[in-house]
Amino acid sequence: MKNKNVKFLPSRKKNNQQPYSVDLRTKGGKRKYFDTYDAANNYYHSQDKFKQDKKLTESFGWTFEQLLEEFKPFEFSRIADGEILDNTYKEKIAAIEAVLDTKIDGNKFGKTKVSDLTMGHLKLQTFKQLKETGKRKGGRSHERLRNIKTFLTTFLNFAVISNCRNDNPILGMKLSKNKALEHQNLLKPKAKRIAPDIIKEVVSLLPAFRPHGPSLQLIANFAIQTGLRAGEQRALTWSKIDFDNCIVKIEDALHRNSKEKRTKTKNSIREIPITTQMVADLKSLWLSQGRPNQTNLVFPKNEPGSVAMNKPEDMSSWYGYLQRACKAAGVEQFSWHDLRHYFASVMLQFYPNNIWKVTNLLGHSDIGITQKTYGHWIEDKEQKIQDQRDMEKVNF
Image (cartoon, rainbow, N blue to C red):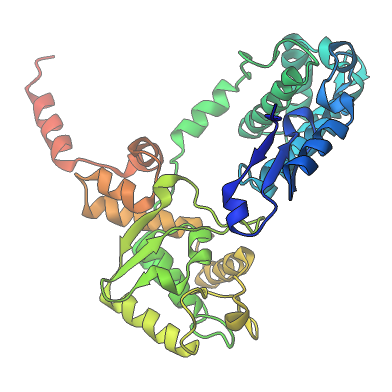
């Protein structure tokens, strides 16, 4: 009888790779590949029984430090499978380690038995400590605590499948909120609107020429006229520029702390029209770079050989130039992402009755994201005038 834990992968066979797979990640191990079925089957049966069939009595006695040592390889293997990014893995482990550094009933969280944890421990002790500590002045923000809670939920789900406990104590637990701070945040706009004259002045103060890289003025104007996220712009290759039809195709994005090229959501894969002037500017850039291949980056790093080596620009470089330009202009500093917000504000003014179009241009996952972020910009002036006229007719 065939071992159902040994899988044959035709795609790997086609690419002359080891086609037989043994996946032990659910047991705290790794996925491995072999040339033959017998080799894979022998490997499976040779593995430590502790990892293959965890006994309830053994794993039920684990501490959280022991659980973390099992969790790390399980999560790390998900990077190779494209399920998570490596920076997500690092952030998740760092968050869990921060939790394990807190205390429960006077003892270190990490030394506590997994089976002994309760929702009360988490609600009344762990998250209270996490809120009061951290690098941020005044402790961790509610948003940061919410992120930690999400990562901890995954960790405790792993505890359940590892037979350390029968339930996940964090499910159903709600974080306490600062109502006064929450009210203040509601009054703050989700994205600030920057006046066109300020945008133009700041962009004019960016370097128009760099010896080994594209003009920062061109890079910024491209961001303003397309609304691309910085990662999408850094990953853009010449194959995605349709000169004939004046279109930019967005299919990839470079992440700040990762070499992964993946868009934020499936809706981020989109096409954006550009002006004929932008097409002309991009053609000039392509010629100045020596007519690079279609797979080359449009906006490579500003250093010798970056075009040939296809090295992407560091996000910190763009941000630094923008901050210096803001300072030179004597205006309040704004981020590179605010250039995307500026694009959104212009599009909402141009298409006041077609928010779906703006949602698609921005690559948002749904219209609700656009309304939540830019709803304070969507004004129906005619409706406001009519509302005022109607109020005049009311007999108070």
